[in-house]
Amino acid sequence: MYSRIGAAAYRADLDNTIRLSAFIGNPERKFRSVHIAGTNGKGSTSHMLAAIFQAAGYKTGLYTSPHLKDFRERIKVNGEMIREDFVTDFVQRIKPLSEEIDPSFFEVTVAMAFDYFAREQVDIAIVEVGLGGRLDSTNIILPELSVITNIGYDHVNMLGDTLPKIAFEKAGIIKKGVPVVIGEHHPETAPVFQQRAKEEDAPLVYADRQRFVSDWKYERHHLVAEVTASPVSDDKVYYNLDLPGIYQTRNLLTVLEAVAVLHGRGWKLEHAAVHSALKQVKKLTGLHGRWELIQEHPDVILDVAHNEDGIRQLVRQIEVTDHEELHIVIGMVNDKDISKVLSLLPRPATYYFTKAQIPRALPEEQLAEKARKAGLEGQPYPTVTEALHAAKAHARPRDLILVCGSVFVVGEV
View (cartoon, rainbow, N blue to C red):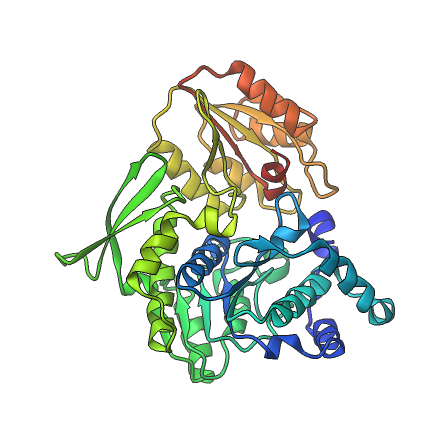
């Protein structure tokens, strides 16, 4: 399992996925889809789009990864998790082929999701890429639209150590004649996307060149974003999001452009459905761990940010959040660029170094030692529970406790 052991579980080809899919009758050909890749924001973007389709009355499948607590979070229809009996029956059904080809955990899960969506007869499935794009198991679909949120440094041991190399892998989801929305224009990656789109005759648009967030503010743990068609336009539209992280403004622009392209392709996604959906993404789709407030006095906030770009956004969020002392509960996996992430974190904070209960987790003592070299002060704790209890014991009512660094740490909380 990739989530447990890391790179050793990654299969860098589509052979097993193609064989599994053929074995169960090629379900990916029986439903329409939107394919979403990117370094950060692809989970939030996927959930927002799924919520919009649901609010517009479409039966909507949603495939995301990883899960926080329950495996079934990965596969949903209209916000409801896949049934347990379907999971067990599916594993039984593919057993003859599984024993022959020994597919990865992810390959089996993708095949299961596609089979479920086909049998549930969804109108549309929002499919999030697991890792990269070109060789990701999800890349056997022919979608209505491809979306690439952004490109940053993550999984460099598998996707490449430069932004253009990583962009090349993500650009692998661009298909012949299928429009593509790129969330953020970047001078290093734009030529890669433009070249691929030209080869595939795929219409390409950059979301951050179509609209701008001219202003934003917090209102009772919601984010209110003011969106305009240009920096000098007076024509403003306000969106109220129940995902309050400032970084959601970037994802919002990507979602709005995706909706515009899909609307142009005949999907009835009206303004009222978009506004209604964005106010209740968590309720409609069950999204967790995106600047999520789980307790007040002191505020305890969970965020799955774990790579360089994600942590930069998180630090910006901390700076605009009202609080007295800052307490950070953090655990990381051992195959990330840990020193880079630690160098970005705020020094005026008390740290509680810990580890999730998975083999990939970096031992808390090692994390504490690396952090000390980066000028961060705190104590190691062997479990996430102990770290969080310690933070709560030390925090005063107006302090802020943030849990971050790994999806698995957030999942345990």
